[in-house]
Image (tube, rainbow, N blue to C red):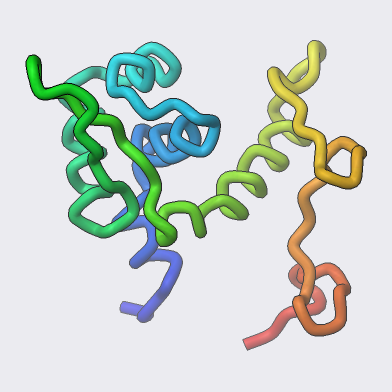
Length: 135
């Protein structure tokens, strides 16, 4: 079997509800009930996914109520580093799956323009696409 960073990454965040939980935290949703509402995830599955993300160091729980005991979920620096992954997945979905009404949300970059994600080489600034990348 080929050693692969993509496979190792998918072992941690490759399940739908995990990535949607990360998306929600990036959008500012931190309470469990709100995550269930915004993702449509079954409560038991979302609980399991959040525990896994916490065990892997991508999420931390922060208590906000002691009676009853309740927690919010926040991305760690490691979790926040998934931002570009979520952005590129969103861009791909907007470009290829949005349908006739267009994307459900649009994002504006700090430059004032609509965000159009692109993966580029950090050294030369040129697009990192299949024909420009080799092993």
